[in-house]
Length: 320
Image (cartoon, rainbow, N blue to C red; front, side, top):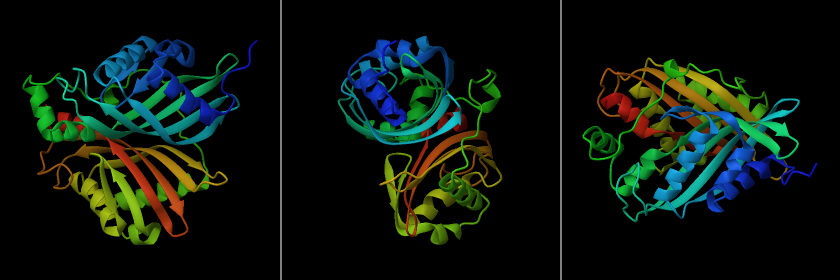
């Protein structure tokens, strides 16, 4: 039996991403992903490696020079031979092909993705991924191509752009290989408590738990800074769905030498769009928001935060 190429889990996640996407070794998905892998995103639920391969080829045809720069991998064990990672990626790409975002525009794009992957140890490969949650900042892509997310969805509904879709929990009828809730590392528990406090209208948590010079990366490829920036993002989100149920779906924390304490949270907000805020005047529609957030802690609280949800999937629920 040959020695696996990757013997470190972080390097496995970073390495296979580069191999598959940038080195065009798409066939390695047969090796690194299970045949019946389940992938959930705000757009859809898919099952099977064939769907992953088809989506990968379609994306590369539309963005042929795409790079996926791994910013961080926050990981933990889920069992004796199983692992979970939350992988934050900064992607660069040129919209040089036609596809789900319309005709080629030659636009240079910059946007983030967070992918949460469950893997089991494999003698040949080191690990093999069998379950994935992924969110792409599609609002950032739409804006750089020239559409506000609402306008983008209007264009899809009018037939001017390819149709889009959304996935909500009631459609989740398949049994997932991984149904765990993460680990109990202190940074994750701390971050969970902060988010739950804010979503319970305790926004005084921001000056108490964030660094005054904090930097937030928020949906749409935008940035916010300081206490006012953090409050604008989180309060704007909660104000739009004031009575919705906020749930922590998955939590990871890491403390590694030479790195800040970090946390990764997958969360959801489900309920009625009954308030003004992040999504304009209230529509009264029931919607589901799937979000992922990474936090880095410093001596004075959260110094950097990365938040992703899919504005296109949200506006599709509001408008379709």
